[in-house]
Image (cartoon, rainbow, N blue to C red; front, top):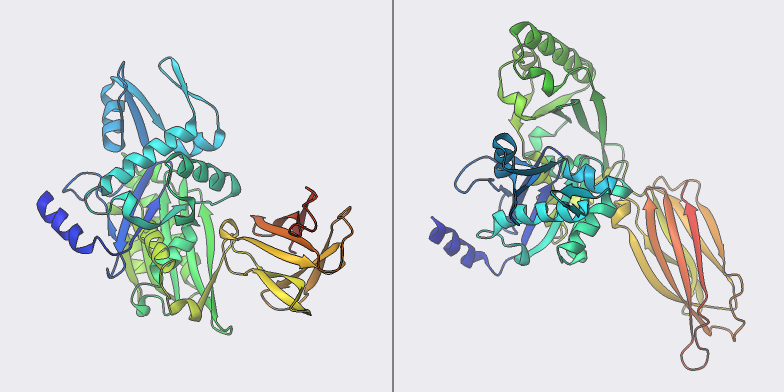
Length: 435
């Protein structure tokens, strides 16, 4: 079997490989694809098996400098003989040292170690050093999560320019638009049953726009939890079935739903019979657990290809920059608009660095244009104290980094002008709110 895998890899070794990594506190998953693959493949946590959910756990064997992860870590937790660490993403964001035996460990280093061991599952089919693009998908891609994941990537010595981030909603969108179009002719509903509640996502289209805008409506129903199904009586199962059916009715009755995706291990049971009958009325229903990792892999592949669907659809969610950002600048002697940041991109992927030459001015004018084209505004940045020089003899470096979907941080550095005017060393920084 290993020989066959190696031969298959040799045939594709010159192609781009992309990777989608779904990272959560309970389970993680990895899906990969070559550019000509019809769909991504999800890696099994066990060689030759079909267990795709990898427990997000690390364990150190007692009195040994040996670490394990996933199911082996869970087994060690059940049988004893070592120290087990779970909730790795949350611990990394909390940043408190983790004591294992008599030593303190940086939680980000432990998260990086877990990621490294997950990537080792790809050693025969898609070794990490051969991967062109990695997309890491998480439930909530807030600034702290992005900071922690970026540090873990640095620890792993993976080139940061080939790593991108997505939230679950965007990964779900990427997965759905790569399915047969009859599955998303109308809205698509995703029901994700987790330990602490039922999380739903509804993908909706706005057909009166060009390109078509697609959004994800997210809801959380905390009164129905996967934890309640463990060892539940028939009466409890029936109660949860009724509660789920009520949720479905509220989400589906006034909306045209083409398909429904059920995510979560608890959907492998038979406790939701009435709910299943209701959702199957004129709708396609699917189960599974690898939608987010496959969606991340599709998103990674789109980074490398000219994907035509991108011109027909624009996905907007809470992490997308909602305005185009540009600069009024003199180019070739004429006042022109210099585009800097495009609307519709994730804020954590939106950075820009550019050099411009000033024409006897100490002010930069940034143009903020909302997606609807209305209420365009100019934000001025004053370069107080910039040296007085001849016309067009001041060069500045402008660095723009989005701090959130609605706030950008601009840093300007005086670069002087060749041998005639050395740099002054002055730097200016300003935060600009887009709306």
